[in-house]
Image (cartoon, rainbow, N blue to C red; front, side, top):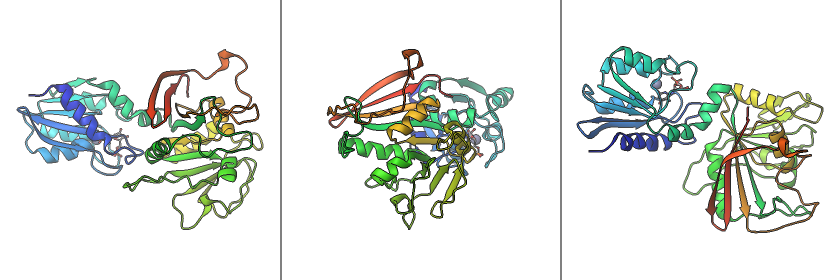
Length: 360
Ligand code: AOF
Ligand code: ZN
């Protein structure tokens, strides 16, 4: 006999198997238990595909005395698929245990209410923190319409992303770089400034061994219109869409989309850009620099999480670019405050992750 915690953990683990594949939907897992045995289980594989509960119920057969564990409240609305709560009402399991309420305003408690009204025993909040962390992207996107933004960089212990002559390859080791590809695989879009494209000419694709990792959309800020057509992001055949963001009406014949986002001339309004990306169902963005782009992102308060890789080097020099450039905070009360800061050893490097307080 296992505990409720055990089965919910299994539902969360199942959900996580689809990491990077469910956008704009959440990751959801479901486990159905009868007389101490798992009789059905499934996870949501992609938007438009069956919800976790539907697939697990199909797997289970008769669920009259069963407990259904699901990592997100069963939905009550007609989206791309019909409401899971209605299917549960029809099949009438004895008990439904849910990790967290669905933050989708179309659901938010209505699914639970439907089940309770029908006399099904409902419990909410088991392993809720884990479930919320798993779906931090979905929670942000569905409640604000803005993508969840991760600011990433690779820097020396003294916070530099290049030497004063511009040498930057490599500050962190190959394990960190591989970890960055995992991050790319999990997001809908990567954002960089045109300076990074001009200096590094990156391809910004996901390269992971043995994985058909999805390539995120490449979003390039070109407020000052410095990009020409010769860069890898414009190469054919296209490995991923390239969207260029400008403040004027310049046309880019090689771009897959041109997003005209007003701001000061030469300065893209990043909050407006996030709103536009949200409208295009981009639920997560990985900002990969450089220093000026990260500075604008923190100043615009669009960053939710940081992932800073620190290599065991000290570069020094006041002309060496820092991870976060720009003018910076005038007083500490203007600094971007973080919480939940965590360190992980990655090869010889350390990855620091933390959440930004007072994001939008
Ligand atoms: C669940 N189980 O496996 C998922 C849920 O367009 P649809 O029909 O796929 O609905 C998407 C919404 O349904 C999504 O925003 C979220 O509120 C919920 N997703 N719900 O009970 C699932 N993927
Ligand atoms: Zn559903």
